[in-house]
Length: 152
Image (tube, rainbow, N blue to C red; front, side):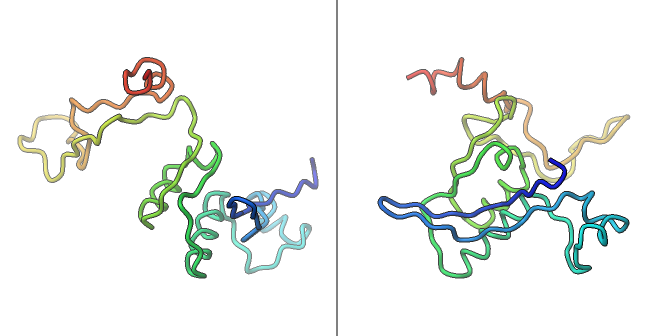
């Protein structure tokens, strides 16, 4: 465990064909901190990145090399990181990922309120943009259990 090595891998799979596109080592922040850098033989140019930051860099690198996929797939670690999901969405990439059961979501696109609040009231000002009151998110495990959309 003390000398554990963790990698972030990007692989391609099609019927009858699989290959590894990219593989990068993940270094915990504790190994990159100044007092541990020399002990761990980490060059000065290496900066800490989360696993999801490494993964999105791999996807961008693959896209820049002409790789196209039907959809990117990933496990729950990546599916719980909204920045990772937003990055894939901003790239216009389709994805299918595992998400934790306590993740919140909607069955239809929620109405997003933009601009300044119409009537300033005493107290804390309302933030914008925000989701409208009628569009309440639900836990995904509850949607999967109780929604008529998923019970068919």
